[in-house]
Length: 255
Image (cartoon, rainbow, N blue to C red; front, side, top):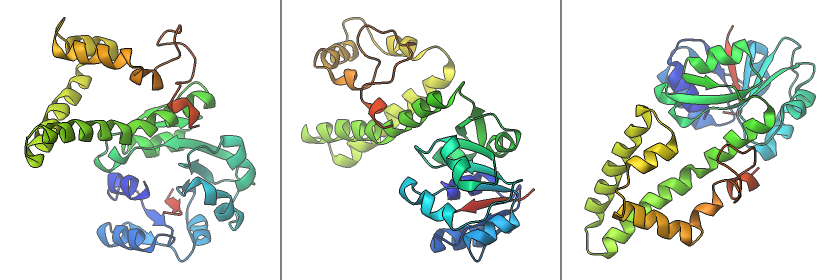
């Protein structure tokens, strides 16, 4: 994720990256003149006013325990599942902490980054690589985080369709190209406005094969892994049954 954000920034601000992931850090420094690799994670903090934490959740405590933060640091955590108060406790005396969920599309400046709470420094950073959405509270941010867990599932679904086509005698390359093209075009329709429910209806002919397959999938319970529990509307404040279980200069720590 560090690489995607740095690519999206494209030299618009000076960046200091951690040496933790040597190959990635060296590649970023070679590609962007305003990026330099620090000698250590502490060197990143000493050189930066804004620090982005981008490590795996199990090692976050270990990483920050070795660091000395300043009271004026703005700490932006891109670590899934670790709440603001917990991060604030670990990075004291720094107290200005923001949780964020940047997307890989940051590299093309097309990320829609969810973050909490509102913060002017974090907003300025993420608006350089796309848009920003700020949920009303931290539990709502958890729902955004859980939603990102569906990416691989969605792509695997497309791979399954292409695989089925291949089993019917279609050449694998042709099947993959066709499915990729069709769903890329469907994705473009999302920018046209309207709710997801309305878009679903637009892509179905009454009694047609899309409606038949959707009906069959619902009958067999597959969509129940994702939408709200039965008996509650789509806007109900409940977690999804499947994904709800998952519960100056700029420095990047643990790139």
